[in-house]
Structure formats: structure tokens, C-alpha cells
Figure 1: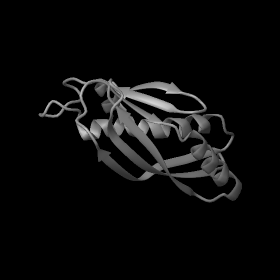
Figure 2: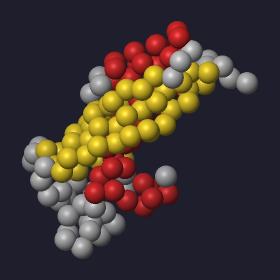
Figure 3: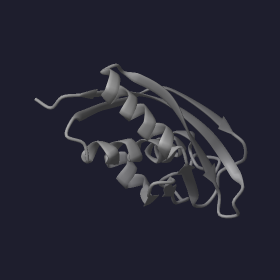
Figure 4: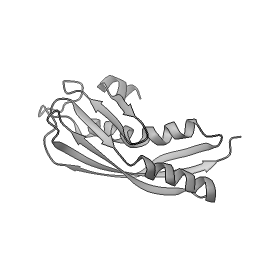
Length: 138
């Protein structure tokens, strides 16, 4: 989280339909080619997919163990300026958590995040494979 703070990562919106994050352009987030470094984009994209399951877990009496077990990225365009990442698969995450709660088994799902620049053009597309397991609090 210190790196995310240093980079200026923001959680812009979280609701029942989508989660969005953003990162500013500039010296803290850019590579020598003056575009946003791919790993910085990964922080924004991951938070867009992971903030909702985390928020869901805060309202549960059980404990949610969640971690990333895989990731893929596609870089479509040079990322310059503020980049906004959006994940609109909230119900998919909620359903997976409920399935783990019912079965007691770990559930793996892929959640997608899309990064867009200020003009709305896609700069990167991300897939994070999350593993969720609901366990009783001790």
C-alpha cells in the first residue's frame, strides 16, 4: 500500500454495479519513455477488481480469504495522463463469495478491469484470477 499511496492511486467509486480507480500521470508513475509504467497500471487494475470483494467481506460475519492466483494484461495504447480502471463484474464476485459460503470450498474466478485515458480510449485490459474462501472467524 505504501507504493500505491506514493503513486497517487485513488479509489474513485465503489457501488453495486462497478468499482473504479485512477492513477495520475507524471514522474511518480511513468517509465523512461514518459508513459505509465505497466506495474503501476497493474496496481490500479487490481484494486478495481479487489476492492468490492474486500468491501463485501467487511459486512460478513465469516472471514473471507482472498488472493490473486494469476493475472494477464494486454496493452492496447500508450498510457499517458490520468488512467481510470473500471471493473463492472460486481455480481460475479458476490456470487463466487456466496458459493464459497455455501460449499465451504475455495472458488476461483476471473475478474476483468479496463484502463482508459482521459479521452475514454482503452489503454490496457487486465484479468485477475481471484481465489475466494469463506471461513469461520476464530
